[in-house]
Image (cartoon, rainbow, N blue to C red; front, side, top):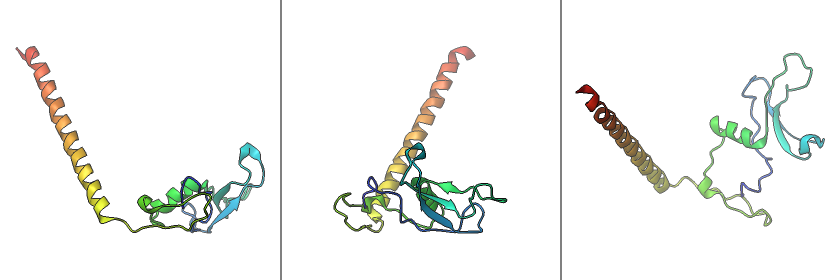
Length: 135
């Protein structure tokens, strides 16, 4: 599946992360208010206008996807997502590549070393800048 073409449907429905009482439901807008007709959205089944004790959970698909990832409900491997919007190809998600994980760790280590070096250089420049004032 190509995420650029994803409509936002077919995500797992979970117990509401706000109220923990009911399941989240997947719906599609029917009105054309704000140009959203036909868009999918996810909300708690207790999110009913004018309902006492109403839950306010409501998310558009991309934010709901982030909620699912944050909760560990789904795992996304962006390197394994392929597809064509018009071809109707099935999802092909590859397992996490250990080599790419190692490369990411190497990049993070290099970034940390660079930040430490910048901090040392900043400290030295401050000390050198203060030296004439000390005399």
